[in-house]
Length: 515
Image (cartoon, rainbow, N blue to C red; front, side, top):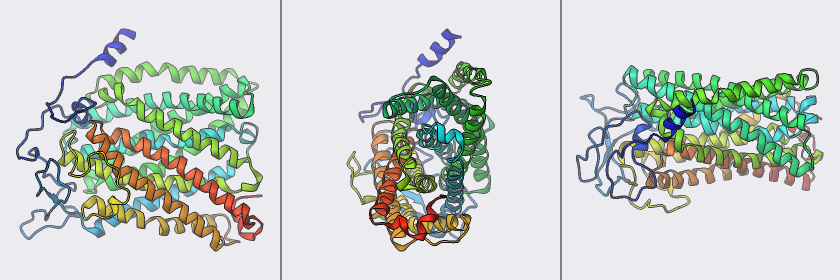
């Protein structure tokens, strides 16, 4: 078994084509992930291949058509390779808004429900006795950015680039990606627990061994079961979007987040209570569960190494998800300290909301830009003027399809958060109303978070593509992790301002959490 795994991990594929651009990774990586191992022939001065005029939305969908049934084309102001005049299919503004708005609202309801659930379970004995579980919360919830959203983005790009047309292509992509995702979930679950143990020991000065075993069991089982269930849901959602003629880039990632937060927190709370009850009388159960899940690792390695769609990521896809998990753990440390501070009571109910909404919106933009680059740019090529330079605000000043989607996403922040705040207000009983000051600083924090994430996403996706890395696998983990850390930090500042200004004494502060 060990020799087989070594050969699988050491297997290398020949280069797909020769590029004049300095790439840090084999350019085949960007094509093999889509199940395509054939070269992309150059058919124009700009280096475009024959299928790059395929529409993002299949025939019969929301793109406008001329009387003869052809897609209406427009000139893209950011063509690759300096060729200019690249014709891309338009996506009408109503269709764009509708496809983004519905999943966004559903995702928001999911994050609100997750916040309500977390507000409820924080009073359970296991959360009161072992507060290090709160360090796990952003890391475990971050798995949707590391795994679910990344899977959704990869499969969405595969659909839009025509790499999931035959049953063989579908089977290879689905089996390879799902087995790889279970492997990553198991490893990340264990690492998240170890980081929580280390941070808890450094801040408290001690960490009982039975508490460490409990954290490992909770994290491993939550990550494994949530990843398994959400993986099947995401595959069904993307294949369904393809059949219905909906662009999965606009739907898949926010829907992954809507399911992800609530499902993951439900598993986290359930396993925490169950394992806590087994801690003293049946402690061997925790050891058996940990050993069983870790013993499945070689199986996932073998399965994923046999599929071209996942072989590259099996060797090179660990850096972003592990780094993102470490970044999320810092947000978990902040959350742990604020939850246990009586002056900041009620903060926990809003943490999944502000973090989830920011991650949802930036993941949509990231997936759209990545699909654009896969369709219209060779690996290593970026549109003119995008050579690794970070230009804050540039994404909101252009006229291309991705510029327009960035504006739509930013404009959704304030009305979306108002809807979700009102939903929390109703679910809490509707007896009190948030103050104007709270609304102002909370909405300002949410707007700063999303604006910053969209600017970073615009730079990061192009930079990764220029370096020969697949943005679908690298960008979303980093962006959602940074979003969790930035959102938690800004939310903590919001509640500190409320405390410093005396707002906690008002009746509206009772609405922030149960007392």
